[in-house]
Image (cartoon, rainbow, N blue to C red; front, side, top):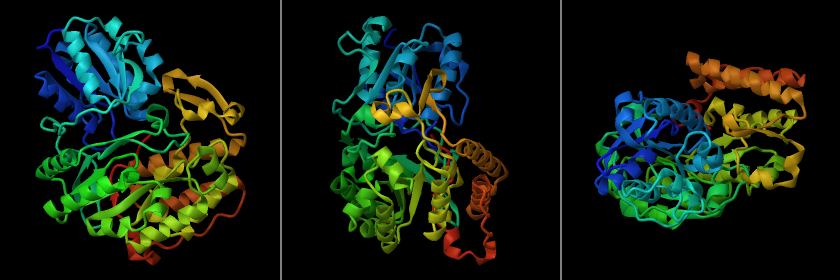
Length: 468
């Protein structure tokens, strides 16, 4: 590879956001004088001419869906340009390093990836072979072992990415507004067993300098953003850091709204944070509730209980900052009664319009390297590794649960295709009916739509709800 060869970075899927995983490494590579092209394969075709002339192609795989799409892309890339150095980078690259390196990848980078990507390109330009770089015995190899070295940060380069109007919008119940995305931290202090971050970062996190975050927000506001999603795995891993950023952001951009993700235990630990966050522009909080079964929560090591969820909801309601829970509704330990209880909990706590219907379909994923694999109990329910699907198979002891998962997933997919998915209350009622039928109990009656309080229709949301 020569220094003036083209570098192509490809994003496969990032929850409907303009890809940070392209913008951030592109800034690093461009600062070193490399010719960089970026393509978001989630919304635009990958041009064959760019693939053919690239000397280095990096595929970003921060999540399971991106991994599957990226693997399909890599097969096409190998046909078009068999001589290019092909690198996968991101969380799922680390988890699937062995498979990737044996199925066409020349290198794999996990953990903090911007500087390692730049270093890798430099080695190739200096004449080091792809085989030596991917050898785990070589110094500075790109064999998938996560890089947890603190690195310097540059403001992400978004100049050649598709415009924000092509991505998820903020639906605030009145209008749709362009939404930007940035990160204030990476990694996580916590080690929930099912989380793909745990085996990669192992309880560590890295703060992005406030000036870099604010400059990234500034450029997205210039691009038309009226809302910012902070995509940190947990925004309150560094509460003092993020509060400084929010205060400065509000001073410069009054009226700019934002959302963020944080754990239930952080909501309980920092109750005073949320009223100020609301005053500074916060309009909703995502929290990985996952389940309201204490047994399931314990098996996942979530660090909270059902009662904690109730207390967290009260704290956020007092702050006038709605929670949008995320769920893992289907696990080996969740019973039919648990599923019915989850739906009852959602109804009782007035959360129907806080939860996108896809959440009721989420099934536990166990990727290679998952921390769940080290648990003694796992052997009793885990199946074989499906390498091509990048997950271990498992079946529920109660076959009704697997059948219910299939039926609910099909219902939600059809509702999304028809547009009905946006009317959460109607889809929620149909899910309850399916669950009641599966359990052999009487289905609840549907509340007339005109009787639903207006506030239930106005919980802010992003228009992209599909993930995993």
